[in-house]
Length: 389
Image 1 (cartoon, helix red, strand yellow):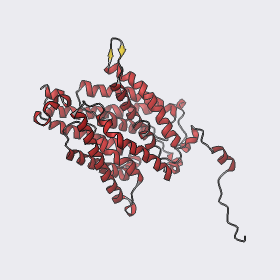
Image 2 (tube, rainbow, N blue to C red):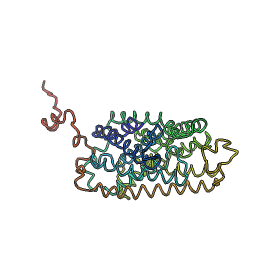
Image 3 (tube, rainbow, N blue to C red):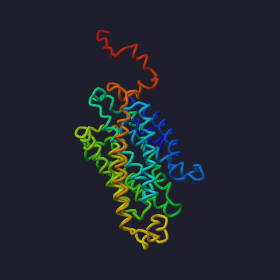
Image 4 (tube, rainbow, N blue to C red):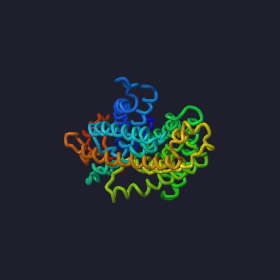
């Protein structure tokens, strides 16, 4: 999911495919290592050693996911040195935020609606706001896709879609909890896919589908059940949540992204606010609602694995719901303040940001085959047919 899914999902820009896939590779490789250390110090540091295992590897992967979500918000407008600094800062903040939520507050967030999606999206959006480029119009002609780049992005979409149930269920308790999480995620994804196709045709010109909506909003169902999928959401609840997420995400791409740029000066390249931000916040609110309805009768013996504090009568279902909401607030604070400070750091002149006329362009950082021939030939001209012949 991290390397193929996110990498190819961002390869929709016509002249930025190498950077989308290549920088995803670079950032994820760094984040996996740095996150293992940061989370190790916070969660599994015993006898002057960090203890690692499959669980710590999965959590480091989740953290890499949050970094790549933020990368999506500033895609094409940042250089590799800036991105590496962003990853170093974000991984540290991610680890602290996750420790506060899951360990100190006892918040439940198996699939990371809050810790991964909401955090990654609003960190990236705050970063994008501070790094606002008023002259980005010079590169606007490259901020579009071509037929084959959209097809590559669909590879990323399908990869993410297929593996999302295992992404959400990986940290849950083996047995019923894990099966329930996978099922709820599947139902939610199918519903968000249907609502995305329906709404894309409704809001599109001539009733035609928009590839941007299909590539992104179809995945919103996986985000919205991140917190609640291990709870007793029920299949109907999962379908309703997915349908709502797909609807909100599609409308976001159509109407809210242009509004964000014109009114708030947030240039969100991949639309992470529509796929991760709004569905992530919805998922956190849904998790609080489902937590408030938790009872011994509904969960039986499984209450201990899903809500241990309620099962041990150390916390009521209502207070667990309040803690869930408080967790969302803390995540938003960490993300927005951290992203804003990160943006100020990334503005340092020696970090080599791309000039505004060269954004969304691979040639600045990569050897692109055929670039020298194009420069030697000058602009291509179409020869007029010889009518006399």
